[in-house]
Length: 230
Image 1 (cartoon, rainbow, N blue to C red):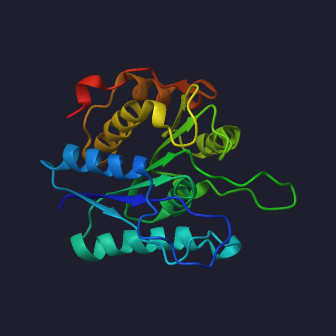
Image 2 (image 1 turned 120 degrees about the vertical axis):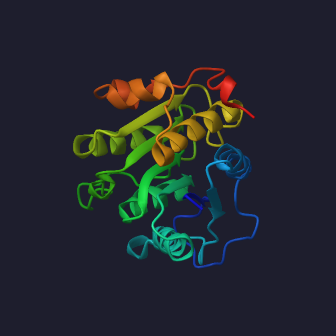
């Protein structure tokens, strides 16, 4: 195998229960299939993480620790290959937090759950993302995870890493179900560029190059990536 995509499903803020075996969302499952098809000829491995606990659980950050373990496992199995962490909801936070792993070269966070900013608490870290290419995608009508919080996180990350972009899916909600094909095409385009150096689409090029807030509020066009679908 030449590279790996590690899929991180959603979770809960606090829970010591074991996650269900079918916890992965429909979006993550279908995205995993798309990523596998796109990278098959290149030798891409795609693996989904089964967490030890459902919850992030405060400073324990269990989901991020499991993402780190998964990156270690990729290295153990396949050697020194680049890894893309792909997370949804709380898995998006895990992907961003674990992005500092030495094997990780890119992160895709879809509708990431991020904590409210509090002057009394440390801000969600961003320095671990230096040297990684980062894509965040969020629906503007998301009522479960606040898109404004992912914008603020992206703005802080962009200050230390120019390779950060964020796309907004107008009128879509948390599951991004209204634009699932476009979101999957964007993720595939981004991942193949990050892992294999393939040319990425013009919107991704523009989003990475544009200064904030333009490159962090890039609208995802209806029909994006139609030619990329298989």
